[in-house]
Image (cartoon, rainbow, N blue to C red):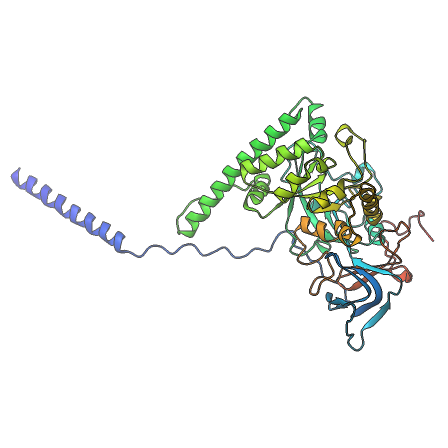
Length: 472
């Protein structure tokens, strides 16, 4: 018996020693290397936009509104390799450059529409083309406008005739979170990828006011009131913040070489988390001044910034607040009274905001106005002057060039005539703030996309070919 006890004690000691050695070995063993980074997968829905071949071109002798607040009379714009090379009164021209006589005419940057639904509410306006609102739920941050965009929409062609070279295509305003928007170059294309503005940040369309509460309140569900809308926004941002926290925790563990399973992807929360990180720009449909102030506070609560309020017909009432918050406004001049929240719209809105230091854009929101954004800007300019607010044409041209580019996050590449920027340029028959002005030549990345004197540039989409309407 004594021998058995001694043997058991000896075995126990041996096992303890072995266990200690094992633990020591485990401690001394080098830590496992972190898993190798995943191979970069092809970016889904990546832009395949390629500028068209373009001859080096100089427009000479024109009056130039640069989009930077400057006017140059009898000036020259030199374009080469798809870029602006020089703008000024005295520009030396290289040999072999194509020269366009701009005497008596005007040059501006290409027109940019910061709020469009072309391609997602395409013409003709039939139910089969109603692809801009996923209006079955107020929370549809998971949808992307580019997955509805039909490049064959014939209004893209008509927008080019109005000098429009880039657009932000947004989902509609039926939902609190309508989904992602997409920035496009206004070029003839078959796929949306061929139009997609390379490197442009994504945007998130949000909407407050009559549209969401009217859509869902009438169905007996939330939001049925404006307070229900704000509560819905806040609940969604709470979920998004938690989703972002889980993703961040997983990435930190992965960087340390620790295991763990990534949170399951949620497309809607992924978009909202992108806003919280600052990667996705908020474009907020909002008419009334009080609602804009509330939405700014929602942003303060959750740490995101609104890039621009859209429509914003009462923005003039809080011009100082918007200037302080550095929030842009995309609006009209002439749309008034078509619903209660548009009742206090005034034509002087853009001028009042500009005087207060707010970044302002004149947008279209529909198929007719996109063809004459220059005229809509002229209405806003004239209304301001009648009210004693003398905004210069040099400043007002920014409403449809540089400022919308800022709202879209592409102002470092387009929106003004500056050396190194994309050669998106319009040659007008006369002052662009004239109702009689015609965009005679439209260049996109230096390529002549539209020339009213050359029938070969009068592109027609596949949809239009063979249609009796508009046949010459």
